[in-house]
Length: 418
Image 1 (cartoon, helix red, strand yellow):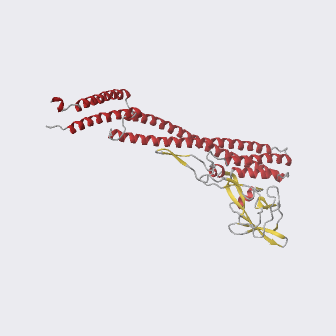
Image 2: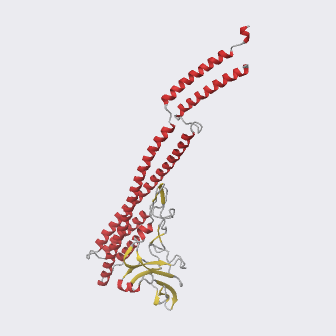
């Protein structure tokens, strides 16, 4: 068979290129520390390596979620602990207020401190996390959950949402609590009520209605669960108001002359409508005919409302025997309601603790899985440097031999034989 000069040169160069490619691959393996550089190197191992890397990425995301959930739960637990401390202080002040030797001035001092504690409580309940989200606002994390209404009483503006985060393929855990379930939906000691200003009232700025208190629980229980409407009108003596049942429109009391801040009593309860300037609302004006105010019955009472009613009772203490009986009943109910608030807080903290335990256990499982996965991944793709160095040395020797052989073969010529 004839061997042309072109074939001779071509085969020599091809041999050198093959050895050089193997050498470069070995060098690249040593520089990266990986023995599988492309799927062509080992299709089965490459597929498994891809799966393991995906598992590691998912595991990393779960661990990131766990850090986020853990921080959120710990923040909530710390806040609830601080809130509980304030509630306990208010409870101590409530007990102190029951001292029969205290006069109205003494009770006013206690009311002043409790009022400060009320603002402290509201501030804690409106706490934000590191991202600026309100902790107890439910899904409404950008809006302050506990806000004062026109009358200066706190209401809940958040929702009942609860955020969940996936920390494992089969585990999704609640990372937040909404303020309604923890602080608002608390069983009241007895049937009670709350007051509201109709947002459609025409007086500007609107007159307010106070928190009020129960004067005779038996009378109010007979009226419960009916609600009241206080409607203003123009009468013979000027501005007057009627009190009616909400459901039937039945008139409870009518043609009452309005005096700003004067007690209004009906069905065993007392409250006031204030339409004159006062420190909390220096621009207040009286209601206009057609303005209405609501008294809503309820069997639940939020902790902030409980404290507001306590402050009202302290500031409106009546030293008569009847007034003392109303005041003592208020203190008793307040203590029960504060106990209910503490119970809710403790139950919530217990739930948070259980979730933290779940998070910790799940995180440990992820760390174990990560370690095992990394070991399997290392077996599949990490380079054996001792073997690689040996191969590199051999390939360099082969390459040098190929160069030498090529040089000798290509130097042969028929003219040397002539």
